[in-house]
Image 1: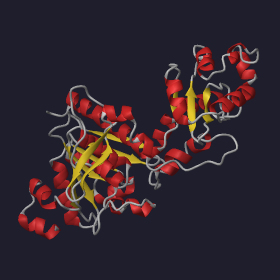
Image 2: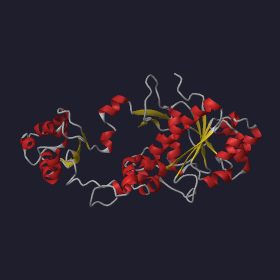
Image 3: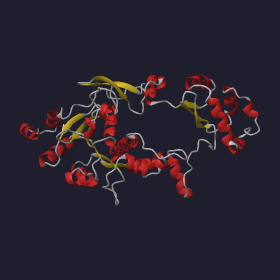
Image 4: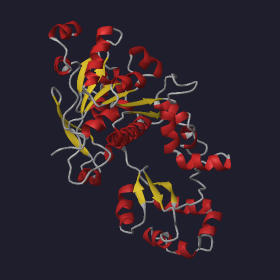
Length: 398
């Protein structure tokens, strides 16, 4: 079947996660993506292995790198060399989209800033992700999502309960959010190009992405100029929107943001119907006034059974809740499996293995490239030939 971006050529000049993840999504949509890597050993992220992170695993590839680079071809170029920069421009000449996470000053140094590229190819779409935006005092400040997305936006401060130290985000959480934003911007820019024939520059920053993801708190802060209210699970404003431990040391999360339709159902489901008429908890106002007491009651109840025992009980009630699953449980989630959110890709040497698919579906279309990223520099000669370089030029670069 013809995918939405079939025939669209993309050049990716990037490393680590945010922009490569966007490149993978474009490949999932059918685009042909050429990944530019630096000599002599290619992208550092490519060379990691599960065992380096402490896993007892002999898989000889980096699964996160494969997830964020599936379907791409690899070309290694030393952009410090003039002939390599010229070759890159000729590869770009036959492309519709360029994506990069080079800092603005480095883009100018190598002649791949959007002004230069759009002057050369006026229909080109140039997309970039950086830490803090392409203008201002911090335009060239290096960043990872841990810094610009997690710490600078206030997310690290509010994403922990009272009395608990701030923690690191999990790897690439902000990068993957930024990747989706970049793809969204690129698709919008392509639509604009359809109307007037002009290419566009699309920019996404990790700081901007974090402010948007944390938008509910940010919107309140903009009006109130007051600190965000951090969650206190021992005395929450709504005890039916709170986490509770179970007998086996696991956790469950109740998410009844409007508790009134569910209060009676919950009381009966947990075997405590008398709580519904308890004068301390008879309505929302009194439950808020006696929140610590109600949390204590619910903790005692949920702590009497295992998480597995509560699954069948709570699912039968129709209340809104979820088990706090571990990652190794989430990958076996029956609903995720039924929906095909995880699927297999084929690697030339590692064989078939599972990865995470694109975060959206289009009815009637099969999205998600099934091919792993090429080996380092494996497509160099073919890509350069397609760009029109002569054999002597190719030999000099190789």
